[in-house]
Image (tube, rainbow, N blue to C red; front, top):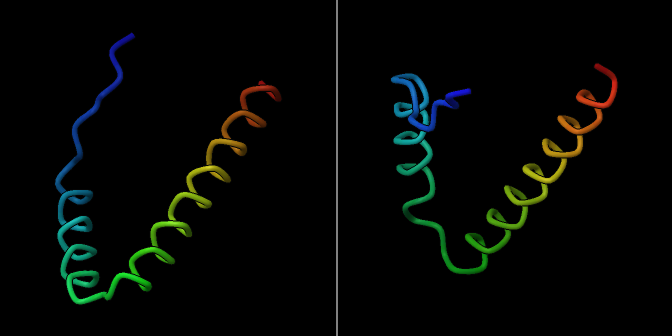
Length: 55
């Protein structure tokens, strides 16, 4: 099974928007944001694992 690893056009646009939004964050703000992103990715992983168990 081929899993697409590239971003689509909408995702690329959103990434650029995020890049502009975080450009002026200081180190403390950046660290807090990174931790929140990592937390959300872990929650996403847990949700995917849960859904796969249900299938």
